[in-house]
Amino acid sequence: MRVNFSTLRVSIIAVLASLNCSYTTAYASSTFKGYECTKNCSGHEAGYEWAEEQNIDDPDDCDGSSASFIEGCQAYAEEQEENSSEDEDEDYGDDY
Image (cartoon, rainbow, N blue to C red):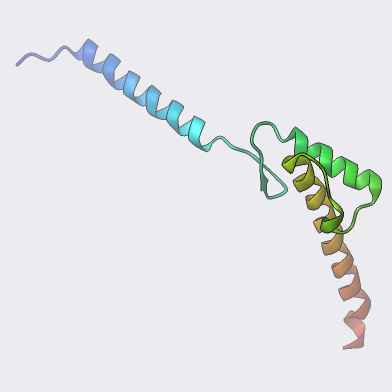
């Protein structure tokens, strides 16, 4: 049996290329502050910036018609809650 290495090499490259495309398409999602983005995270960024401008510190105060906007707002509010609880821990640290 005679093997045509040129054809075999092209076939292998094609298979590897298709595997790489499948991998990047299936796993190329990004996140914003722990929330998964569907495209480019712009909705999350807008919600985060809005929450920052409005001084939102409670995730329950986040509302809107876009899930990504709400998640961005919640991400900001969650950070504020964490920072607030860390500040409280520091305030009481010497009393114990």
